[in-house]
Length: 127
Image 1 (cartoon, rainbow, N blue to C red):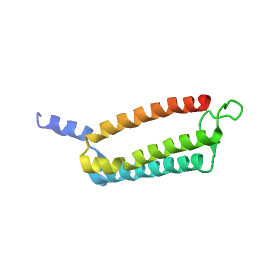
Image 2 (cartoon, rainbow, N blue to C red):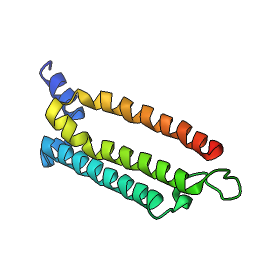
Image 3 (cartoon, rainbow, N blue to C red):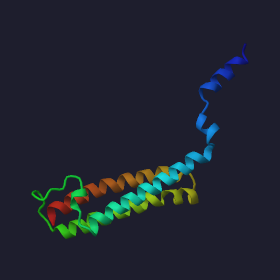
Image 4 (spheres, rainbow, N blue to C red):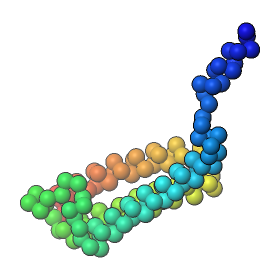
């Protein structure tokens, strides 16, 4: 009777993805997903910086903008490109330095996004 308890508890922790795909499937999937997300963010930064598509910026309105639109587009696009590079480079950094760097990377991206929000509002109203 005691032999059945470990078998029952093992069935509840069974991960079918590891059985079907293996551990490498999830690593490959997340690597490809972060590279695609990084490339998409870089592309949005390009559209903002080079093509001056300021409508892609959340909260942007011509009627409430008080600064130089060219400077704002260049700076905001540049910061989006930097964020895209950081996101796309994450799998390489994890591959080189190990899985422990993921936590550091998450905090870096979070701090970077908060700084960008603050700087974007500063650039919008001070230029």
